[in-house]
Image (cartoon, rainbow, N blue to C red; front, side, top):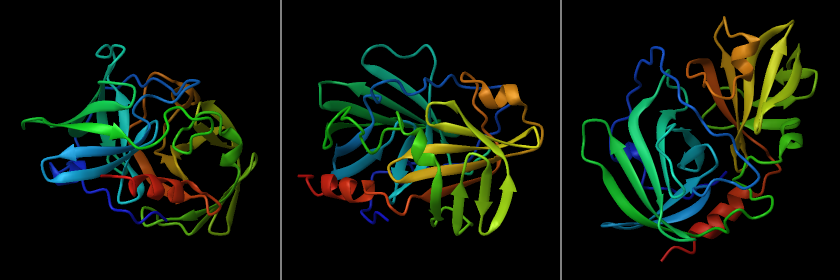
Length: 257
């Protein structure tokens, strides 16, 4: 597991308290043939020195693990600017902290963190990784097959072992007969006896998130690419024990000046 500490985090800027979200949903653009501009390993240039930033297509990493979901804010983006709502894994709704990525060059950006009710904090950033590299380890594109197999728990999970097959979900030795299919790029829907019970979502890197639904989620809601489910019975981060992305990320972060 990656141990390199990413010190420039939302947590260090503002306390991330969950907000109750009533009838509010974001429109998140799914991953396409190339990863979004923000995906990768970055050097943030802060007044206190260089800090690492690791971002997959949909998540900001903290302390080596995927931590905060990014939900693209509909109608606020052009070719260079991307605004996001955020939500911490395990929260029941949006976190009161927004993020803006503004492309200033092929390998540079301005990165802005905006806690609700506080002054936004902006820094410049330089890419340490290769953008849109084929099979980039932080991208979720084209990796459907990697969902199936064995996973291990992390400090952000309660389970120890998880195994996913097309017709089975086994958690710490308890096997359930299910059907599993990709409902959007990077996300598998899990159905048991005709009832949707969860997502298995690619977090980028060596990680995935098992998101178990609360009762009442319909098949249409599970498959809707435009409306996000924000409140889960549980969200647990697991790691592919054969993954090599942690090593690649650590290598990139060592290149910071």
